[in-house]
Image (cartoon, rainbow, N blue to C red; front, side):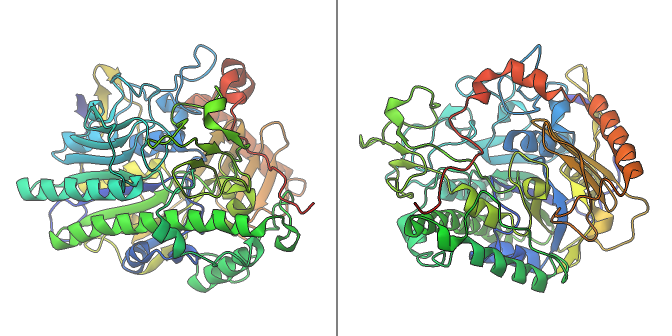
Amino acid sequence: MSEQTGSTRPQTSGGTRPNVVVILADDLGFSDIGCYGSEISTPNLDRLADRGVRMTQFYNTARCTPARASLLTGLHPHQTGIGVLVGDDRPLGYAGRLSEANATMAEVLRGAGYATLMAGKWHLTPSTDEPDGAWPLERGFDRFHGILCGSATYYHPYSMHHEDEPVTDFDEDFYLTADLGEAAAQQISDHVAAQPDVPFFQYLAFTAPHWPLHAPEDEIAAQQGKYDVGWDAIREARHAKQKALGIVAEDSVLSERDPQVPAWVDTADTAWQSKRMEVYAAQVATMDKAIGSVLSVLESSGQLDNTIVMFLSDNGGCAEEMPWMWADENPRLQKSIPARTPEGARVRVGNDPRTVPGPRDTFASYGVGWANASNTPFREYKHWVHEGGIATPMVVHWPAGLPAGTLDHTPHHLPDVMATVLEATGAGYPTVRDGHPVPPIEGQSMLTDLRGEPTPGEQTLCFEHEGNAAIRRGRWKLVQKYGQGWELYDLSVDRTEATSVAREHPEVVLDLIAAWREWADRVGVIDRAQVLAAQPRRASSFVTTGLRSVRKK
């Protein structure tokens, strides 16, 4: 497959190479798990945090597909061919498919003698019917069970595959999140039984809690009444808990409620609004239980202590809204949204009190007000590169190599995951893949910081998605929404990005703009106006990032 550079020695306490488990949530906000401030019960993730390291300033790339591409390659999304989503928009836009010139983490670790296992969402190629060179088994994984598309019903998902074979028949009690956890646990169990001395890499990529709002009835019932207090009270409670946990500073200020969102006391249909968040919380709680299935196998097989477990989200909480409609009456809907359930019931799409979320004949999201709560204490959401769009919980658990119960406040981003895995496993990084030169990885290993040891210098972190741009260097963050002016924030005192100080520090602004543009040119960022000209179909998606009215009438 490739030529590899020299390996470093594995950084373990016992001399054996660690297993690697990377767990990725989908559309999970910064405060949505217990150990980052949430009221949602996530005991398995909390246990990992208590025995591992929580990172408070780790960043993703603001959107699902680019995040997956960056995580698996150690590169910025634009270098992988996926600057926005899947779908070929060349010659003006991006290829929209994982490039043959990139090496995935699975390919790198398999080349170093690891078994490579995957369960979950792939979403790195537009081809979901026929292998095209960019399916999991073609990009380094020995095993695969999951969906190839970006989103689907949790009860009978589209593009579900076991290895390369489509799965179209589902039991009555099938639920995707639980199924993925069971599949990942089984893959590990099978491998350990057959090859106990061979280390493994497990990539578990949930679709939860990405819309649609689907969850088992008993899990929803467990959340009943918790959100009747409304999003304002939830934001305040989460922020207070974050201060107590040390996730944010004691003098941290909660961002203002999104100006598009009314105060809870002024909100219409509060019972329905509460139900939306109950289902979302049930999705998160169910994901935690699925993670527990994997941890149980690791523990019972004696593998947990020497396994690096990383948990993070692909972007911030999602404020996408859906207009109400019948799925079978709208030709614009993708095939991942079924027109009817297997039982023949029509599927109701959209955010409206006529659609009470949870059952299989619904397809809805939880909306801006609750996304604002998910991203406590920050503002903005998925799509944008303000803190609410790119800040993620990041838990790293490795008893054999890291301290327990600590916090790491060092800024890091997705390309650093590959660099960290390389250092920990001693795997070499390829220079060539199938005759194509492989770009050098963009990240830096996080191991020194995770161990609480001083790191010289500071890393400059750059971001771009849909024309939204940001650069962070030390305490300074320069950020802009597409088509708007640059804002400058001193994150050491204003991490919620409340007050821009661009006018007070013009020299910092100019220096960071120059650095961002140099980065953008180097990694292949394409001008947003040019990308939009190439993809009118995505510009007219039925899902919007705006707010439909939730005010009392």
